[in-house]
Image (cartoon, rainbow, N blue to C red; front, side, top):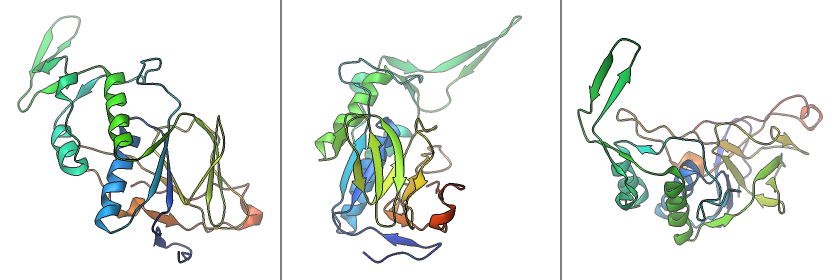
Length: 230
C-alpha cells in the first residue's frame, strides 16, 4: 500500500483490517456499509467490531430511547441491504403530546409514523446482521488506542488488536485519547452518522482511507492525532 503524504488520504489495500470501536447501530451500520462499498470497488476487507455489551441475552443496555423514525427503514434497505425489523415493533407512533403546567400541545405525525421498540433488541438485530455477513464481533471493550506509522493498535479487555484503520463510532471515548507511537501517519477515523430527511449519511469511500499525521515523534505526547468526521 502506498504510504500517504501529510494531508492526503490513501486507499486501503485489499484484505486490509478495519477495527470498529463500538457495536451499537452506528458501528454495525458502518461495518456493513464499508463492506458493501468495498465490494463494489472489488476489494475484500477484514472488519472487526469491538463491543463489550451482551445484547443477545439482554444483559446490557444502551441508554437511548427505542424509537426509529423515517427515513431509517428506507436507508437500511437501500444503503445496507438490511431488512427493517418490523417484527420488533411495539407499536407505531402517530403523534406526540407536549405537556406544560397549564396546557397540552398535540403534535400529530404528518408523514410515516415512527416505530417504538426495545433498543436492546434492535442493537442485537444489527450486530447479528453484521455477523451473518462475515464481520467479526470481538466481545470486549476498547480501553486504549495507539497509533504507529504502519498500523493502529487497539487495546481491549481481552487482547490487543492490530489493524490498518480504527473507526471510532461512540459519542464519547471510554478510553484515553489516541496516542501516536513512533512515527506517522496515524490511522484513525471518527465516524459520526447523521440521518435526516434532508441529508443522507455519508458512509462512503473516505471511511476506507488512511489519515496522515503531521506530528513528529518528539511532539506526539503534547498533541492529539487528527480525526476526521465522516
